[in-house]
Amino acid sequence: QAVVTQEPSLTVSPGGTVTLTCGSSTGPVTSSHYPYWFQQRPGQAPRTLIYDTSIKHSWTPARFSGSLLGGKAALTLSGAQPEDEAEYYCFLSYSGARVFGGGTKVTVL
Amino acid sequence: QLQLQESGPGLVKPSETLSLICTVSGGSISTSTYYWIWIRQPPGKGLEWIGSIHYGGRTDDNPSLKSRVTMSLDTSKNHVSLKLSSVTAADTAVYYCARQPTADHWGQGTLVTVSS
Image (cartoon, rainbow over all chains, first blue to last red; front, side, top):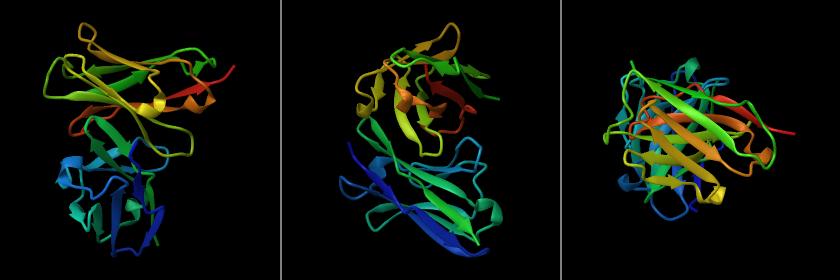
């Protein structure tokens, strides 16, 4: 089974920019992995920020964007707010199977 | 407005079968536009994909769960069910259902504890 890797933790200053990445043990992440990004605050259910690499939901703040970067999926947060402090998970598809990354804890400090 | 609600026993004994239902309200599960996934999260840990079920009954499940997963759709009750057999303490988790492919709707999750 593929392993999906994320940075365990990242810190960003309020108003700053941070990029989270999502790699695959099988090789470059492409649009065919249909990358998702989920945000989970403590004690809450996850919510979907991005699907299919870069598509946002209506509730996704404009400061979040998804892309492919250097063979990985990426989630960029531009203009971090205190409420963005959370765990972020990526999720990739592999011909029927799906795999989550281990999550990135983002601290806004 | 579409809502998903997981339900089932909060406590299951080791070696028994965990059974959960995801009730969908405000929309029908009888559509090929969407499919349904189950995800779990052990306490203090990350998310794990359990499996997916498509309209028509096609399923995919996590190989790491060693074929213990059974999923089905009950169109008369508009719900999605999950069964996980031969549970151990490692199956203790919050279980979520969600609608795919956009993952636009999630249930709030239900905690299942495996303990004697």
